Length: 278
Ligand SMILES: [Zn+2]
Ligand SMILES: [Zn+2]
Image: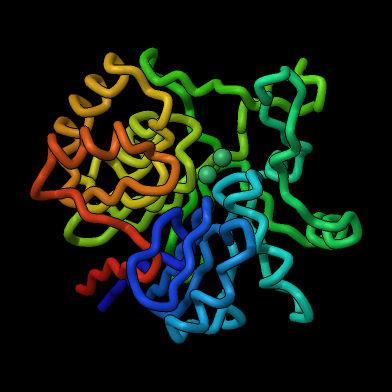
């Protein structure tokens, strides 16, 4: 017996009464014998959406961060507030200073917005993920994703300093995955390492098992036609049964994926549940 049930707690869109959307991502992942909170959104809507869904965030056995950008990590403080310690699985670089270059050339802060003493507290007892790792319930994290193909531009206007001189390679970027008899389920944060790089890496970590479901941000919002063409080609090769591109995927890329894979794409608004049992 096994199961995975993924509920979208935070996403850029909401389509049901009472749910609130924000630019961000958070999934509640229920597994056999454990629950994992994967990302926390910005922190404005996480707790309210969870309450409305009947999900008690304090029951999480672990929290995992896909990376340190505010739209994935900002809710951390609210989840941990007043609670005993919970394990937070993240790459150390998730807690680096993070900036995005604005139109004027100066950096806008986009890192984990935590007071320094909380930051210190997390760093005192985190679970650093610098290689593939296993979470409670058998969920796995990729750790840093090798950037193997040439067509995915994994750069961007991301920097480690306000003056925007040191590029942030986002080494903290990682995805979660679970092998099921029907194929592997992959949960993405922003896929800053590239959607295809991430999926290829998950395939290699699972001995080439087929992919079943891919859900989360694909960071294709600035992708040109060439990259989109190659991404579609790779998705045909990888043959995932179900695709739920959301968050930072961008309208153009999302529309393209829906057109190319009309029977496989699903929306991923707040409250969406993806469930498998075996
Ligand atoms: Zn990001
Ligand atoms: Zn994001």
